[in-house]
Image (cartoon, rainbow, N blue to C red):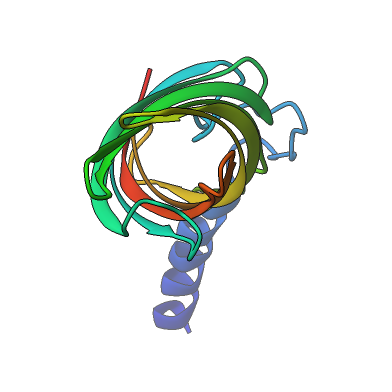
Length: 175
């Protein structure tokens, strides 16, 4: 009987140490470091992009490849302004400078994306100058907090039948 009682009490003593210590209560005040958002309330962006312009049938220019630069400033998480310049080979080189108002809807989680829409106006010129209006939309994916990849499409209305559709894709640097 001694052979059973002594090991039993030894096991009981070892097991009782598992219940030692203070009682743990869940605290609603536990705070961790919040993750940095992918899309900030205020940010400056610099765009570098390539483009394809499809001139409509009444446009005196041809279809062509091109590219350009842009700068955007978001003064709120969902609203910003931007300017950009694009040049494409539409016969003679066609230059297009625009300003725009941008509205985006950031979706943050395991993937950071933001669909956006914009409207704006500007000027297009080769050997003549034409005032333009444009509207379009796009999608941006943030690879990191400082680099994004975007693609967008826009339709441009110009005087003298200079309407065109343009598709852009590029890299966005965020500051």
